[in-house]
Image (cartoon, rainbow, N blue to C red; front, side):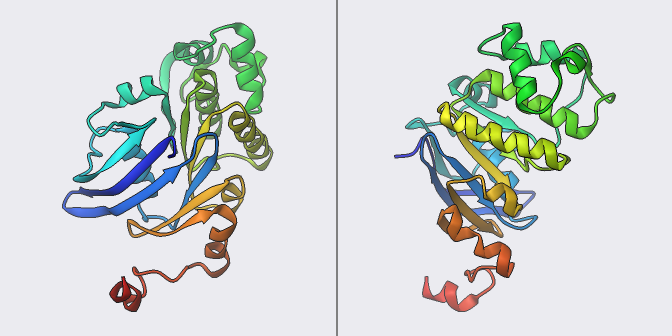
Amino acid sequence: MGILQVDNLKLSINDSVILRDVSLEVPAGTIHAVVGPNGAGKSTLAYTIMGVPGYIPEHGEIRFKDQVINDLEIDERGRLGMSLAWQEPARFEGLTVRNFLSAGAADKSEDALRDALKGVALDPDDYLDRAVDDGLSGGERKRIELASIVVMQPSLMIMDEPDSGIDVDALTRIFELLQDMKEAGTTVLLVTHSREVLGQADTASLVCCGLNVKEGPAEDIKGYFEDKCIPCPVHNPELAEET
């Protein structure tokens, strides 16, 4: 049994069905990617798992560490060991990077904060006393948000489009960081439409139009990027009839 299990999840927003009986299982200590085109429901799935307000499933079950968490608020899920790195990170006027990192850190020492920034390719001497506001680029804020999750030492880290707004050199370092976190025991769930990000995963789920299309070793999902599609009930009605 995985650290995270999602069974037959359905969710609608403004009368539009976004998730249609989505299921997945993520083994502890692995990196699992949720892959698919824009609008497939990938980010909605991540927000629903994390318990973001407004993302309440109509049916289905979410289990984390063998506990049903459907009725838990986002902060309660956080206390269980779940964290989410947003595609578009927030701004915090007047809050320094140092205070932002230490707020939820398991280890609030100066060394831990500095190591976290180094891990996302930011110089601590240049960033610790800067404000988390519009003075930072979107890519810088995204890396700082990731550093804040690293110091939390979560059991499960969910990352929505980790390569968005990140330059190639920084992305390489973030990939190294993901592997380091995996080795340290953190389970990672990556939401992506990037073949390069998929390459960091052990296993993956392909989602299209809110449906599971394929799940298995990440290597088996790479065909999606080669063919831009994998035969599925969404675009092949004859397959829907067979199922």
